[in-house]
Image (tube, rainbow, N blue to C red):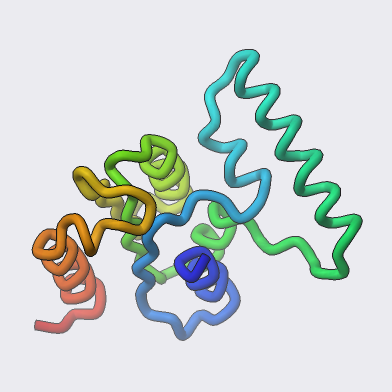
Length: 142
């Protein structure tokens, strides 16, 4: 959830200069709907998600957050590195969908052999290289 919150914060606080988020897949039904497959299975899942998120909205006083896709689009100027679990195809699908919100500012790295939020543990040297390269490139540091 931390990565998803960082993405949302970048939309609200334009002083955030870069975001690295690992495992961000869905904050809202809209997020998930953007990368689900079409056809019967996709329609069933979209319906279940609408029901689940709709009930949550009715049963809690919290406002629904901005979708991750919309947050990335709104965070103009902020670059994002989205790290996806290579073993979880849904994470790569989600990251690529979020990249479509601002392809010039969003980089995706699918960490080989990693499960959800396991890229650093599974690929420590690659993780460090990806993150440091991204931060150096986007923050103009050396």
